[in-house]
Length: 326
Figure 1 (spheres, helix red, strand yellow):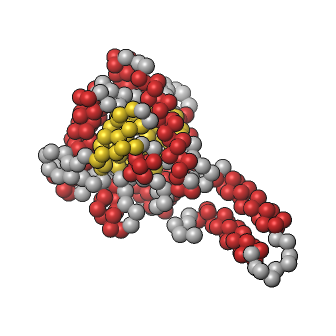
Figure 2 (cartoon, helix red, strand yellow):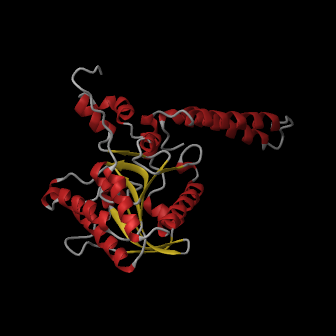
Figure 3 (spheres, rainbow, N blue to C red):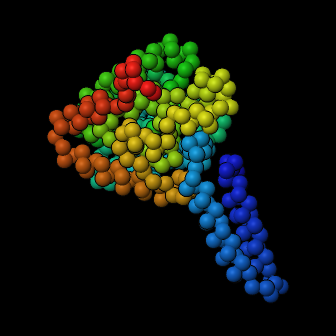
């Protein structure tokens, strides 16, 4: 099995044995009844998968979020949405292929869909800049969102990025300013906005298209101010401490929901979205339509006030007097 994660090896080994049994059962001269043994092995594979994926650590979920076979933005655009017509360029500098977007349909609704896009292989990753958008990518996203606002189209954003591109060129073209403008403008757009973290949700690169009325997250995705490796390098001076950092950062979907940083978790099939992308896309569509229908029932003023209150309420802290113990 290609792209196998370490914790998936027990499942892979059982699946290999199961395939060997099935091949033996297909032998023309074989008189032994393999049906009972095959059924027992199938049950063992299913139970092992259930046990492993029901008890994933935060670091293992980060690995799943980065899985190279996991559906990306364009995969969901083709399966969850329809009639996609991609639009290009920021009308200021260049086309950024790490950020994709355009007109589409979700069910019976005409919408604008925007998202960060990674590559499947080295050539495409270079073309997509590994899903790390430049300033022109965020300016393109804002251009499309303003267009959607003008024509009254709901906006859907799909987030899957390790972060905005941190190179010299991005700094020269003001990456921080581009993201900051998006944060301000998205707070003021009058149409419904729904953001979904489908894989990695890294820092300002994710938040640059993440200000929304509803923020959803797939079960095995993460959303964080910094990557576990970056946090480990700062706090423990060792990137190998990434699993410990992932635990401390509270970046999993369950943690984020408890802290009210996301509104709902979109469940994935057992084993992750990459094991059944069609079911994942169908489930995501159901959740997006449910939230869109709810938002369309609100007035523009109610949506704007709710969006503002939602982000103002984020962040939890506890104050203690000097005499109190920790």
